[in-house]
Length: 380
Image 1 (cartoon, rainbow, N blue to C red):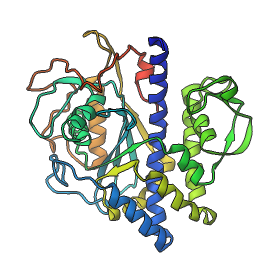
Image 2 (image 1 turned 120 degrees about the vertical axis):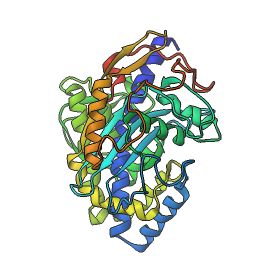
Image 3 (image 1 turned 90 degrees about the horizontal axis):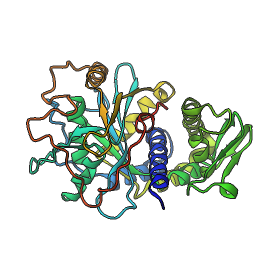
């Protein structure tokens, strides 16, 4: 396979993972509602999933940027959603990162999608090594190579980037997406125009997914095609794709809250088994039901930056002035003052060596240059 085609497939895969990660956020909130509102059987099943998904962080149960541990039931808090590809051999990189902030009083949720190639200071929470400056996607790989602490390194790096505490995390891989939609019995959406999309294996031609205009019940494979397409005539580009993504999320919520879909929850939970890791307890997961209504009005913040090939390796160089604005907005959302935190929010400043760091052997690859629009996450 030539380098150009490999590059195109990598970019398409990363965009798909970001879309799926938004949907996973919806699923987490839906599951919280299911366990709280429905049968004892589902509650116990969700409890079993949460218990098996539990993994403690090296730092303990409190962010170092917090004076005390926060409680999702009564406090403002944050969750870092990490999407990884666990199929590769060796340490895994994070292909999608979304920091979600929850305001207890307003019940509003704000998301920041972090481009995987963002040039940042990698933070080792164990303080054993200096990894210098690298792509934020490599933080997980560095940590994974250090006794399986990928989530710890990623969380510490994101905290340093925004100068905002990361209280909880949810880590998923995406092999189960099609299964989850199928477990709900499909989703009902309106197809605006004829959409012709490559399938989940990136096959086109006779293998492409063709959706005709009108209302349809889509299975998992069709739903994936529905949220991926942006190039079909009349599809609306990234804006149209974002609207269709939200339509799928709303359709999932609608389907999940109907009596007829209750029995499907068991299969949805089964689909997440082995693909779901978190430090949220079962009780904390249930408390997220208070934010289920916020899914219809989620505000997504998008980082700005520019392409950087100054080292011969592609990076997405974040705009530090805009980064500071985003950090301030997150502080306001969480009810914090900018002076509450002790870690610098500059994406590249550090008291230690800031030379570019090479990724672990399994994370190292020829990282091609990409356009700013391809490297930057899109609003849902």
